[in-house]
Length: 196
Image (tube, rainbow, N blue to C red; front, side, top):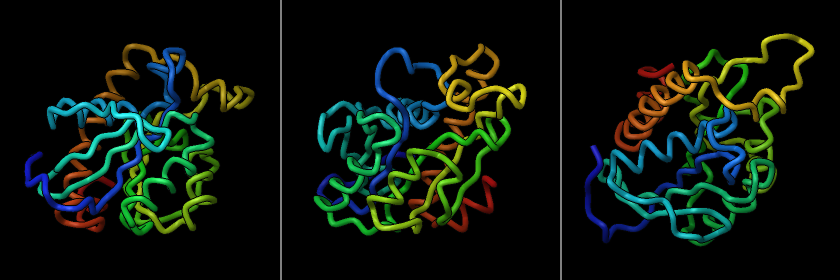
């Protein structure tokens, strides 16, 4: 799945959204970081070089040279890190793939999109505001909604996962890693057809 030449220029940026720090480990809002962990395992790489306010790695996935980013700015400032990398590598917005959580989807369900609004997600909102609009592909990973109407959404997405939900999220992260490969090699339509 993960192979290719290192000499080719970066053609994609993949941004995994989450919050840095131990207190946010194993939370719903860090679904993007779960996928980054899965990519590290599958590709045998480490996303650990500090650049553009992010932990990063340049890697070749499915024959495409990509720049992987885990912004360390906190979720609602992810756009600043992303736009820096876009400028450095001269990557257009349509080649910036963003991986995020989505509380409106059932736990573990994937939704691949070519473009779209933030849907109230602060990380996506900041990327839209700072990187030039909504025209970037994304994979949203369902983390389920709060258990009742009065539950604060921020408290929900920042709460620790129980064992069952963490297992479902890890399985979704593995499927997301595969979906990334499909996007890179066959395009967004093929990924939407296969994973939505």
